Length: 74
Image (tube, rainbow, N blue to C red):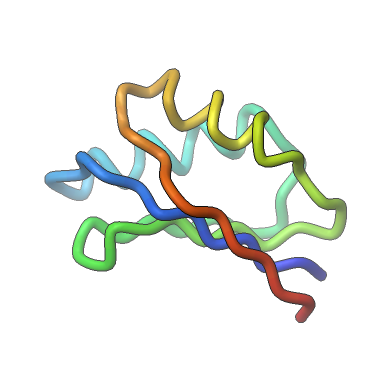
């Protein structure tokens, strides 16, 4: 399992978090995705790695600004 953490700027409310979560679920096969406006990040749990460019595109298409991406094996 891979944990991908993406810094995301521009989230203001719970609907913002849900919008990003839905975009990630529609774009990729993931086990879990959780966004936090307070932490300014989205955490994705997946069995298959996702290219940075694809994550950036999926989030940017929602109108939010993706930033640094980090990974760790779970």
